[in-house]
Length: 266
Image (cartoon, rainbow, N blue to C red):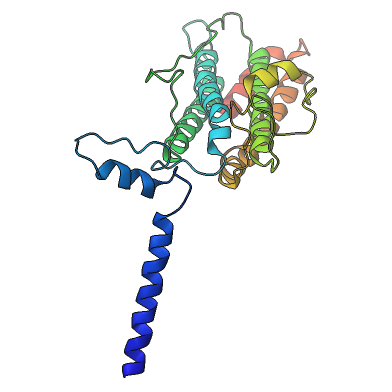
């Protein structure tokens, strides 16, 4: 019995020593150090800083990219909504096209909210500047003259761009090597991407002042919520577009073909 009690005492002493060692951590940017520093002096304010936030891993090197993705999803939600409203008027009264485009609008909106929730869960912020709690969306509202085919073509472009952007951000989050601040962390040579729009891509997605962007949690989130899901949408839109394009190219069946195609979407 005495031996058992001595073992417990030794374990407690070892645990206490380990905790003391943690307090003596030379890295001052720890939550423990912050708590000790702030609670050890009088005052009513609290500033935990990054040490006592939910930020960890390479999130800081990906936050800008996630913010851009979020705003682009919300922006494209309005684009789909405006395109759909073009076919739901007293002059052009379709049933299927507004329903299809409204569905994509809702999807973009929900994905944008999903990104916002994830950013906040990881301890980030989504405003355009440090001193602001707002962000702005630049939405092109010119949808007049959009036909069914051109709307499907624009929708396919939007969906492809979203998945291409997600792949770029995914590569950035899976890069294990440090990189120069402000540069991509996705590939060794980012002078060219699949669409040949290298400069625009570099300006849109970068790590900011943080050289480390490796974050498996972000990569998993993008895989589960975006990349795989959008593959189905791209295929769906490509199928609709090519089917409808063949119909409208035939003058003898254009009007009836458009009507039947729209009904199939409804």
